[in-house]
Amino acid sequence: MTDLSLPNLPGGLPDKRQVAASFSRAAASYDSVAELQRTVGSQLLARLPADCAPARWLDLGCGTGYFSRALGQRFTTGEGLALDIAEGMLNHARPLGGASHFIAGDAERLPLQDASCDLLFSSLAVQWCADFKSVLSEANRVLRPGGVLAFASLCVGTLYELRDSWRQVDGLVHVNRFREFSTYQQLCADSGLKVLSLQSRPHVLHYPDVRSLTHELKALGAHNLNPGRPGGLTGRARIKGLIDAYEQFRQAQGLPATYQVVYAVLEKP
Ligand SMILES: C[S@@+](CC[C@H](N)C(=O)[O-])C[C@H]1O[C@@H](n2cnc3c(N)ncnc32)[C@H](O)[C@@H]1O
Image 1: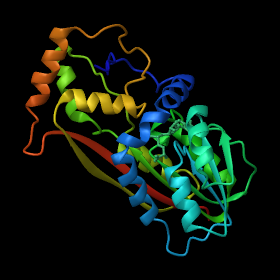
Image 2 (image 1 turned 180 degrees about the vertical axis):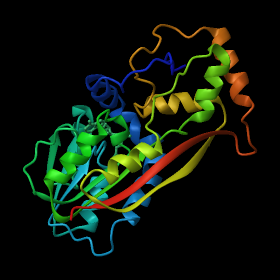
Image 3 (image 1 turned 90 degrees about the horizontal axis):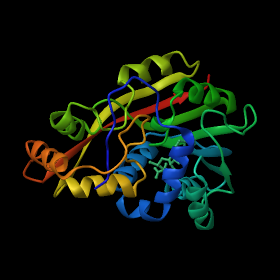
């Protein structure tokens, strides 16, 4: 079973090299288990302004490039860029096309010129960025006036059933940390970009058992990578405790896993 362990220590998000390595390892299995990613990215696409017609767009944290291809189909006349920190994801995405250029890079330090893009689209990537303020200031820098940043991310409340179940087992927090929705609101308000919309919406998936959920998180490369997570094997008694605790959440459709999704559309004045 995937160890989603993490002591509840103050501290940042996972080390970037670990994030890149974890997503690179997950590239081959990612698409088969990416139901949430597909739904969220599609909803983000639907939130783009109706008159959005970028001459140059960027898929920020493109992963396997599913939405780079969707953007390429939607904006047939624009030039598309797809960027990710994980080389393994880019190697998977590149042969499938969609964008003209696949670029290894970090959302917190974009390897792009000032005022060079009209649309930054980013679905379920920036929750991995510890310094979201830098992501916003980079977006502000590379967007042309009138350009749009549309992102979907995760906030506190995500995987709360798993977090609470682990807490009942050993009093520790075992799930990746997420920013508060109010932090997204504050950082967006202070970004210099105009907030056109900013909402959080719960999205609940169901699993037959705890093992299916933790396997899926691993296949997505999204299992816990926070600093200070306990290493080594997870004991049988702890796993049984986790399963028993999670069963208390069971619904008719199965075991619920809630994702609290932030959707935002911002415009450069
Ligand atoms: C959950 S996947 C989403 C991929 C894609 N946007 C989708 O919706 O299918 C998150 C992606 O963000 C990338 N990522 C994480 N931190 C990043 C960073 N600082 N800069 C760029 N990409 C990053 C990961 O490598 C991974 O491919």
